Image (cartoon, rainbow, N blue to C red; front, side):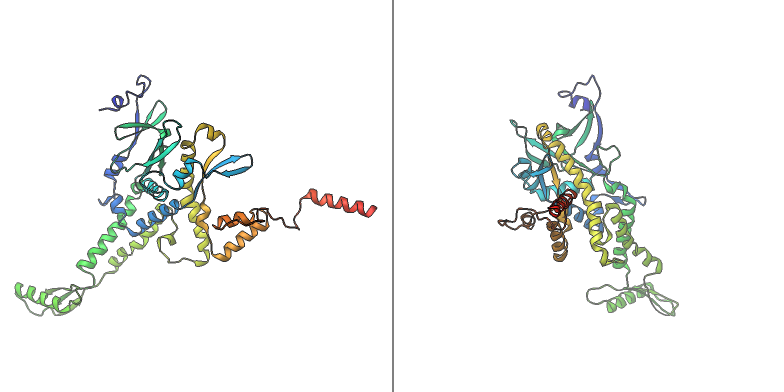
Length: 410
């Protein structure tokens, strides 16, 4: 069945024809291939420890960000804890998963498949969102279709308008649909996979347990096999396998060791970690590579990780939530969603203490506000901001000078 027939109940086909922008089924099924023919897909890429670890770090950090609904009123931001959207994004978006698992998984889809999709289920009477259902693209392919300058999503034999779909795209050329990082990283990941396979094959079939025995006179072929087997069994221990080849018309025993060229190729595993860090935009130390890491700048590296790796995804999701989870009236009244990335920047106790003290004495936070951020109960008398006595406005200084002058004249 063609798209025109499928969309007939919803669209006026005389104005334009629907255009398919992407299909998660196509990209998820075929993946990519490196130049040396190694298939690079989600499953093979995740066998690389650095790539797996990078995906885990980004998605875990994204998922654990506190998420809240706010309303901007004049110069104030009011946290709306009783808003139904707050429960969906902060506690339980649907009957199958918590908010932590939902945000972790939708970002995994965006990174590994290029796009993360979730359908917004609305109340039939109020139009308020009642659930956000994550779409498993391995079982439910999604097609993004443009028709009459509007976007629609086709899956499960139904068509859903863009207003009822949360869409988190990865790297994009058209600003609408994303492309998996695996597609562009296929060559680099292919080299890393080749190195990994070579290392496994080398240590299984060659490694350090291989040698050649040479004899000074010709030997019967069967005798060579028996002698090699006997030598191998004699040299093997603790379940290890030592392989011995026998060559005649020579003498001595040669222990075959890894060549400089083979050692250099095996070392590409280290460079593979650096490549993964670049592709995923993750600092190298986050992938457990501590070589040449200066511990004195670790805090700066953590800040860079949050700013470069997590905040861009958070901003994308905030925009989707704001555009699609609130009514037009709520948007006019200043409702929005905010991810608190400061939760990832918690320092040691000493640094935290100095940080909060400076903000309290500068009048930025009240003492009770800080207690709330530290999950502590409020105390009476700590709701007023403190003001440093040696910090005044120019108007206050002029007023004091005027009063002083008048007092002296009297």
